[in-house]
Every structure is written in C-alpha cells, then in structure tokens.
Image 1 (cartoon, rainbow, N blue to C red):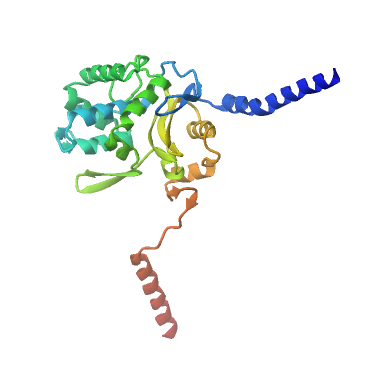
Image 2 (cartoon, rainbow, N blue to C red):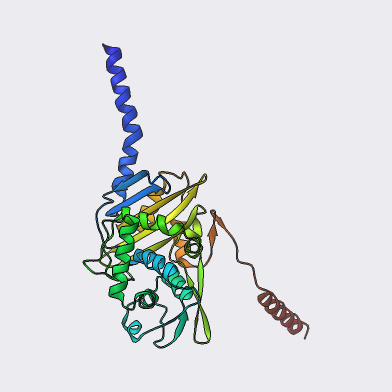
Length: 312
C-alpha cells in the first residue's frame, strides 16, 4: 500500500516537472493569438486561439505581395496617384505622377512596410483598392483561409479587416512556394531611389539579423492591432511557420514560442542591438566594424601633422 502511494506521488511529481514549465511559459505570452506549425504537414506545435479573426496590421502585405508578384511584371511601371500623399506612415514617400518599378514597390511594401507602396500596387493590379481587396479575399479562399476578410492593401486599421493566426500561416506557406517572395523576405536592407538619392531601409524583422534559422517574415503594428508577425524558420531540413496577432511584447513572445523547437534563441540584448541598428548580428557572433581605407588615411594624416608640429 505504501509502495503504491509512493508510485502515485512520483507520477504526479514527474507530471508537474514536465508540464508546469510549459504552462507557465504559455501564460507569459502576451499575444491574443498565435500559432507555430511545421510547414509541410501543418501539424500544430503550439498555439492559442488561432482561429480567432483579429486585425493583422501590416502582415496584410503578405497577401498584397502574393497578388503583386502573380499579376504584375517586375519591371512594369507603376505611376503613383495623388492619394499616396494622404496615406499614413510607414511610407516610401512616393511622388504623385512619378513612375516606379513594380519590384521596387513590392520590396518597399515588405521590407520597409510602406503603406503608400502597397496602395500603389493595389491600383496597378486592380484599378482600385476596393477591387484589390476583393481579389485578396478571393485568393484567401483559394488558399483555404476562411477566417479572413481584407478591406485594404496595407493593413491600416479597419474594424472589418480581420485575419486569424491560422489563416496568416496558411497564406505565408503559400507565399513561400514563390522563390522571389523568399528572396524578398530575406533582404536585410532595401535601397530605394528617391530623386537623386538612394535611401537605405532596414528590414523591421529583427530575427532576420540575430537568429540564423530565420528565413524571413513580416511584422505589423497599429495602436489598435498591437504587434503582429508571421515568419518562417529552418531546422534539420524542415521549415516552421510562426504567426502572432495582438502582441504587446512581440520579440519576447516570438522567442518564447520558438523555444518549443530551438534550445537557443536570441537574448533581449541581441534583439535590442538590432533595433539600435549599429551592428548586424549573425549566429550570435557580433562582428566589429572594420575601418574604411578613408578613415585610416585620415588618421595617418593627422598623426603626421602632430609629429611635424612636435619637431617644429
């Protein structure tokens, strides 16, 4: 009898040790909804309320990019209309009446999350943003995203504009089949010609800079939508997709969920360094910036002047 009681207590203790840490970690995640799946099987590894439609902010641009890549020639000229002036940031600050290459606007929409670029693409594809939203919804149904309803091309908040974390992962999986899409989401920087200047924009996806398994992804934020994200990661020949909606601590949530499949994830310090933009991290190795030849020559010249002054 005593032996049976000891066995029962041991089983309870093992259960608590194994599962309580997972429950505690899940309770610390601030996202209203999230999903982590294996891409090919779509087996759910972790998730919460992932069929609930929520505002997706700029993760909307995944679908905008899908349609733009499928409907437009990359070198096609897209003329910005006057409406781009009134569209809120983030922006490329497009000039009305100016022609831009479709591929530059696509990169701008995904890397810089430019709302004016997304709007210009919608006009080029469908003639109006309203018609483009209808095409987005049609494509979503084709992919199997049944808890989704798009109203605009950028993800600017609208109470009727909704996507579930499950649908977002489905759409991202579809997009990953396009090699050009994969190339674009993997870009750390994007150069855009504005007037006589080349402007460099940095990808908003911090994991791309400090987490080697990251393939790429798309962030999003509005005050009402909170932080949103969808991205893909590699491990041992498999691809995993993470989608998050309504997060108050995006990178904290993302790294906490990724611990379900990775033993090592970026620290808060590494993620903060990426935000500062002073260095680029890769596989947890911080590389010191090399001095340019011009800087070396300048230092040498200054040193020579000091020596001549002392001799005099």
